Image (tube, rainbow over all chains, first blue to last red; front, side):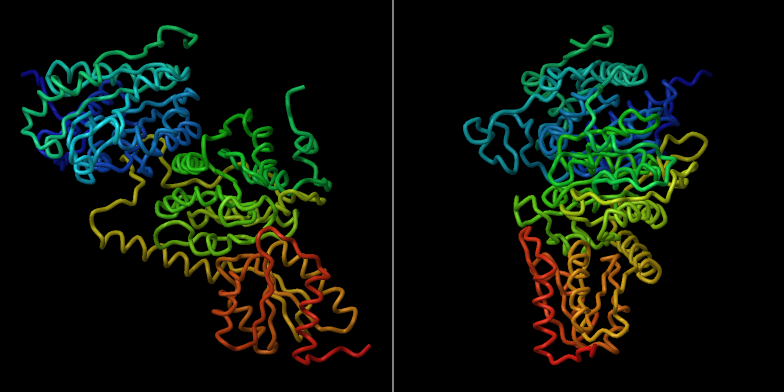
Length: 251
Length: 375
């Protein structure tokens, strides 16, 4: 009988610690599937900075090095420059990539560093207990925006993918979500394309993934999935934001 | 001609052993390249810019090497971390305010047991301070500097030649003990020119790092990390670091003594301050004052035993630093009340002259009624 579904080789046989309904476990699995399909397991080096996903190294069966909060892009730069044959990726949350690590991320992209950033956007700081993130939506309540985020006081949600699309060194940027089977398939396709961009040596690639955090959103998992569709993806529209992979000269 | 600073051009060939007149900063860079430094990540700050510029000129287009001018010191040290993860010999440099920013990364390097060389051409502080040479980063360098319970080996050269030699040694020590090594120079050392001779050639084969990550080909995947939810696990990491530090104290402590054999008064001083003190000592000796010098070369581990041994014979010590008394505390700890300790310091980037130290040392000498050599 033909086996149609199996655990990816690049995924360790360990149970995820993530909360019910969390998007991390889906993205982890997608990454493992992509590593298997693209034969990257023995070339990949991952960088999970602090956040819920710091434990990604317990699940993904590839070389991994922890980085300081927000410094993923700098660490990836160091690894890739010292070992260009490796396939390097960061796995960063919104607090990590869009707040404390903004400078590292923008400049790595601008230098056209040839690595892939997997950017998990769940609009909160998950691991520390649901504080306001730079991506928190207006009127969204978090533990540090208890009255709902108000533009005049807490500022606006930041769109990192759009900002990164403006720098010349970035080559491929797509925003996807993992809140439906169709979106999950699109996410996998985007991740594959991002790694292909790196394999082809074209420059900086990033996949922003809108990912549910039912625990900190104080929602049921199904409700969280729906919230991504109805609310979050209005602020963070899904789709390809930049793709100059087909062109030799970046715009 | 491509834009290359003139001092970079002074470097001729890596095969010669003839003396070159070089800036400290450039000599440090040349020594690093000869030690097999493959990656350098930096950010401009005075007074260490010539080092970054030297590396840009000599490393950025070299095969198998990498040079990146980072967006900040924080990014630079994290690039260092990344290159070290991948097994490269790697260096960064900065000056005091920039070194403060690098402390996060240094703590991670120490925690993950990754080798790296960090050069601090220190300047006056606190805050933005001044760009003149100072020694006010002693505490920061010798006490770990960042968060957590760790140490870094700290080397303190006092001449351009020694800076070049210690740069080479720093890479070897970093690889041997798998930890960050700090070269604590100062703005004067970095920006003064002296003849320098390079005794070492780049090694053909660099030390193999068993733990380096370069993709899990033909072996199980590896993780470099410290974060753990189990405190007992982290305690064990701390113990293993501590055991290594104890070993380093036993084997790597180094210092220089100068005219201490018959000394009645010993000046304890490091780096460029020790160089100034030497000048004062030579003049003092000419007028019969028996003054010697103890110069720690490794600031951590501190040569406590050497001081203890000296204290069996010498009762009077004068600690001289270009700060408000930082190494002074290590001298006090080493002597445990066994001798009398006086202190003279000039902070903020003021560089005292040998005659100033001579005045301070000889006044102390006469006040204490120490024996004067008959001539």
